[in-house]
Image 1 (cartoon, rainbow, N blue to C red):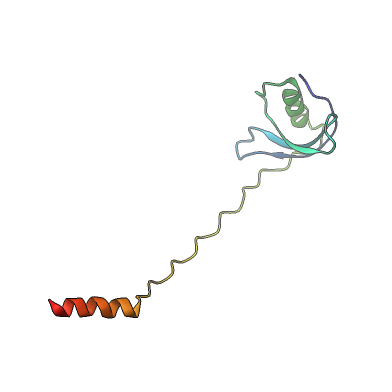
Image 2: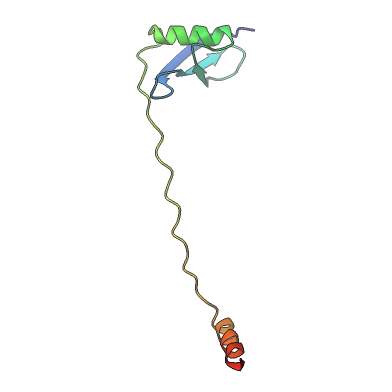
Length: 97
């Protein structure tokens, strides 16, 4: 079932290869706009139509793809601090042998 929409904005490429366009689309059956990935091989007619219209410039210039920032580095491991009581107990057992 093709969905109807009333407003489309913010076109930007979804990846470096420009294989899709992310749009902000206000579909008529929803109460607010939502992100939508439009691709040329979409299985739904409205997806193909949104992609074709975006590429044609109907919703403005398509912004370039911006890669997400890299994830933060993992925290440094905490140093292992031996338990003094355990060290003393092991030392005492070893001294018996």
